[in-house]
Length: 291
Ligand code: F1P
Image (cartoon, rainbow, N blue to C red; front, side, top):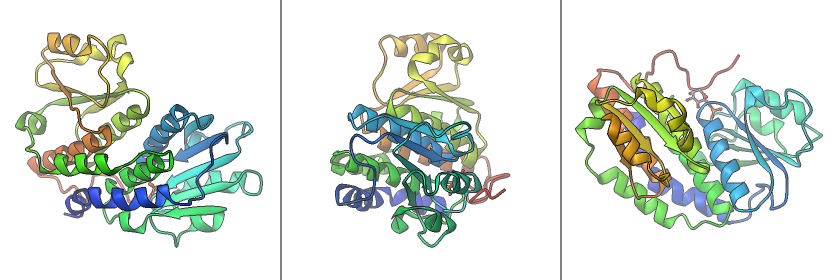
């Protein structure tokens, strides 16, 4: 399938994206107040980038679902970063139109020959990470590799972890589980949201996602044997024990959290197959939503 071929190329596309990110790019410089927008997967990558940029001390960074951005004033942002694989998503184009001539925009996209390009002041294209699949894998993670490299991270270890995540065996318990709750904190909360979306899109799975510390404030009520609680990144104290007490399976890996998302891509693909679904033709979805 396209999805399988695309998800397997992630170590290479991350390296290529990181090279662009660590060179001269039009991404906002340190100090700028930045709004990051996107839809679906691209919104979740916006969440992760915003958390990483603030953690790196580069300035106020807010992530918005494009449909929800700037419902009022544009609040004095110095730059807007739009993320859109297709470059055609209506809500993203509307944001670009709305701020045109007032706030500098830079769009990270897969195909540079799209409407988003003419509406943006600058673009960063990742054509090598563009995809045929409806369900995004490598474009999204490569965009995040670009951002992380731009924030000064060396992505070599993450790419190596992704290769390991592609080679490790998949646990049958994950393929057959009834339900998944994904958790993250800081930048990995966006990854948790994306993991949950990926499993829904590709495999029609029941999934939820929360900030890790929110889990005990209600969502743990559904944890039970046959269900999985999967944490990206740092484990809050006591969480593993609380999950174990419910009989749910607790999963946390030491690999780079972005590489852990690659493992979820594989689980989503395998679950689709085991349910007789074609991950390249996900139910009710199109590659780009145009209103
Ligand atoms: C965004 C997006 C995808 C989603 C679906 C519809 O597309 O919401 O994340 O999986 O395919 O479109 P884009 O703006 O990044 O092209």
